[in-house]
Image (tube, rainbow, N blue to C red; front, side, top):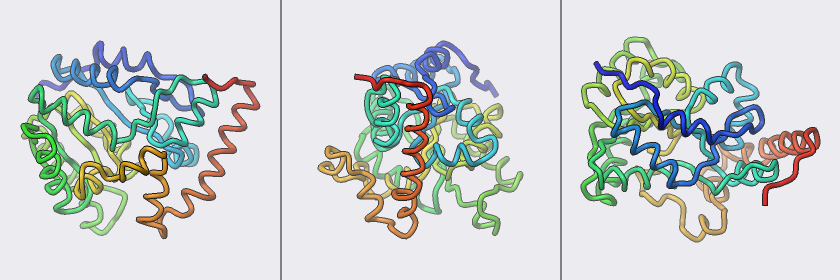
Length: 274
């Protein structure tokens, strides 16, 4: 196994990270990000990618070790306008919201153009397969190296923790498919812990975490209605779709996140980016 190692793409991407609420937030344009992914695949060098939104920021500050796990990623993109606006308010040159729904279609388009193979791992049984079908329909020529669902913890009766034998199976399945890009769509903080548990065993240049992204992709590529995306109301759409699970995230938790941003602004006397 020729396990990828760090190189110029990772080093260049890390240079674009800025301190944000004790976390490293990447301030990259879409073009710069895609250049890093393309170079990593072509050079077989390792590039790890994750995301933060207000919910992830709060979890990171409440879960021991999660900040460190997130900060190990070469690229940490702003997933959510709450992070974009908070970062700009603290003076960081964040370009725009860069969640999976925006970034992954760009990766798929580039993969179709250059022949980069993608492996879809995570979410429930049948979900990665439906996501792969939608992706290949939207991006003709997109190579899908393989798929594997991520509900092994639920099937075994202990949600939130994989058996070692299942982790070994996951690694063997992914490596056997020889993908260029791996999408890991399992919940936070489980996905960050999983990546760093197996990273040294994976023969994959680019690893991208995705949370519930494959669930969305399994419905359609453009999951958010365009008019809501344009008006920055993605959170309203998610709350409408799943109010019982998300009401607290978009009320009490969002206010707690806002207080964190305000505290850092007051403490450091920062000026917002223009």
